[in-house]
Image 1 (tube, rainbow, N blue to C red):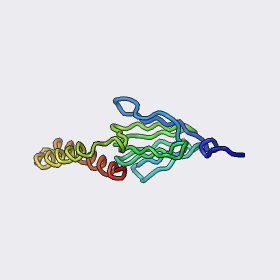
Image 2: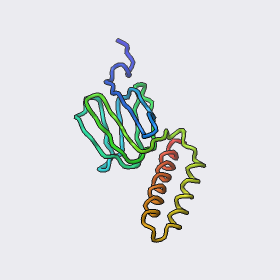
Image 3: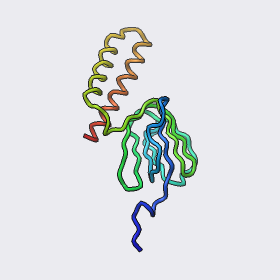
Image 4: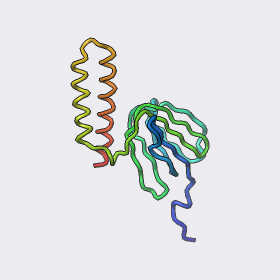
Length: 144
């Protein structure tokens, strides 16, 4: 009996969404996401769960054993049986991140943080931009 490994595995429907729209919609056999309490791995038939996500690397293990990696920001993940819904502010495929652009964004965020002084609002915005830029570079560096 010769069947491929992808037909033997259970599948999950995975949707990765941002306010701008769908970043990924398809099937996977595993999802690994950065929850606020640590890395969270999801397999088919997982117990229902809602988890808060922190900026980090979200990995989708595809049915053909390839892997899609995304740099994701804060958000939530909802799991019900064989459906995973990931809602984040921003998501970008790691292999599509322009490292020069990401480095420039990091420099802009560092400059904004230095210029923020005692302005708490400006400081918070600059720190958030800095975390996003650092995350994009960290995730991208693993792919290049």
